[in-house]
Amino acid sequence: MRTMASVWFSVLVLVSVQQVFGNVCSKDNSELNCNECIRCGGNWCNEIGSTHCVTTLEDGWCPNDQEMLLDMEPMSKAGKKVSPVYAERSLYVLKPDRMDIEYVATDELPIKMGISNTTQTSKFHIRTYDTKCRDNKCRTTIEATPLQDFCSATGSTAEFVFVTISVGHLANVTVKYFVPCACECSLKVDTNSATCNGHGDLSCGACKCHPEWTGEFCNTPICPKGRGDVQCTNPDFSYAECSGNGYCGPCETCICYTDRVGSQYFDQEEYCADICMISSQCEDCLLNSTAGDCESCVHNMIVQNFNESVRETKDHLNRNVWVACNETVNDCHIDYYARKAEDKTIYLMIERTCNDINSAPIVATPKVSIILGVLGILAAVAAIGGVMLWKHMNAIPPVPLNDPQYQNIDAEDCRGENPLYKPPTSSFKNPTYGKW
Ligand SMILES: *[C@@H]1O[C@H](CO)[C@@H](O)[C@H](O)[C@H]1NC(C)=O
Ligand SMILES: *[C@@H]1O[C@H](CO)[C@@H](O)[C@H](O)[C@H]1NC(C)=O
Ligand SMILES: *[C@@H]1O[C@H](CO)[C@@H](O)[C@H](O)[C@H]1NC(C)=O
Ligand SMILES: *[C@@H]1O[C@H](CO)[C@@H](O)[C@H](O)[C@H]1NC(C)=O
Ligand SMILES: *[C@@H]1O[C@H](CO)[C@@H](O)[C@H](O)[C@H]1NC(C)=O
Figure 1 (cartoon, rainbow, N blue to C red):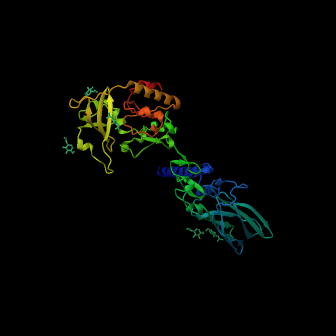
Figure 2: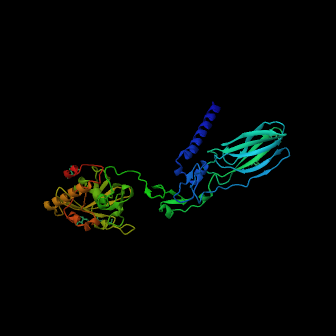
Figure 3: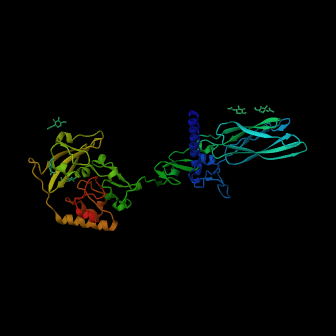
């Protein structure tokens, strides 16, 4: 049973090793680097922008800078009855090499061949190609070819195979085959090369892109996930799409500003939503200003008692740890401070709320006309761009506000949910949004 198990084990290992090799060479040639190209039996061109790896040489391919593989001066040592008895030859993957062995005999002798040792694998093909005998002399042509998986992934520019060929009982011929399994140019790497737009390393005239980039010159970002229904491509609207706290970056993602009040809490994953937007999603918590856990909230939120000296705390970058927020819920205006801990828990301190007996209720005067005006602009923007513009009371004065079209949006009473920031909860307060 044990033997059986080990047999299976080695079969499995062989199969998986072969798959690893096979996969590299079954890739498209344009995806191979110089070493892989050589190991797979291709030819390499170092010219920038050329077709680097080709299997068959064509006219006009790489006129100036083909990678020349290391080779060895062929040498051979004659014997008395057999010549050569020792030889050295260069050999390239998948390129058959023929060599003649001459011996003294009236008739063809049995030839036996085998690899005596190798610095790589034994995936090496050797055979007698042809034998001719005349005038007491025979000439046998030997053909040797390293196969596609001869070179291991770590093969160097100089690998060897020793082959022993026995010619009847006359003599044993030793041939040292020299096989390059890598390119010399691959030893030179220009990291973060300008040719690769700073997103990759240049070697052998080709870019190896960093993980997030692709393309011949690493100029195309790889986008791991789309933004689903929301597009972030229109630079005119990208500000609004990124909650007013960022701009549209590569891969349809928001790049959040880092130099704004509370920017340490901007949520890259959630369209740069700031801490006031996120905490305002939990109205119950803001209305019930008694200290404790806000259990009905999706985000972990804890209310603590307001303390003037605590709210002035600075972090090591001298930023305010606590961000001032305000929110009007059912005509009740609430001023509060918020911070986010390392573990993403949001802490709130309610400074003033209309529910407080001690503080005078601040009831926002409804300015219907302004709200309607804003909604009208929103509708127009949505109609034009198919994108909803949104402005939170807490947002930092946005860049596009220089555009007169946006001016009214900054009106003090403008508020609404950011339809692009989708809280894990809940419905939106403004039913109009649903219709867009
Ligand atoms: C490989 O074989 C050749 C010829 O048989 C011999 O000269 C050489 O020392 C061997 N090398 C190793 C590492 O065994
Ligand atoms: C060739 O090598 C084999 C195995 O090493 C050995 O048995 C044989 O005697 C050798 N033949 C000659 C002619 O040296
Ligand atoms: C405040 O909390 C109490 C109990 O936790 C709850 O019954 C009440 O509805 C909350 N008030 C508001 C305005 O949500
Ligand atoms: C406010 O916090 C400071 C420092 O944490 C503390 O010393 C002080 O007693 C607190 N004030 C009140 C009124 O709780
Ligand atoms: C609400 O917060 C914003 C941003 O901090 C601020 O500009 C605005 O004056 C505040 N509104 C009120 C009524 O306090």
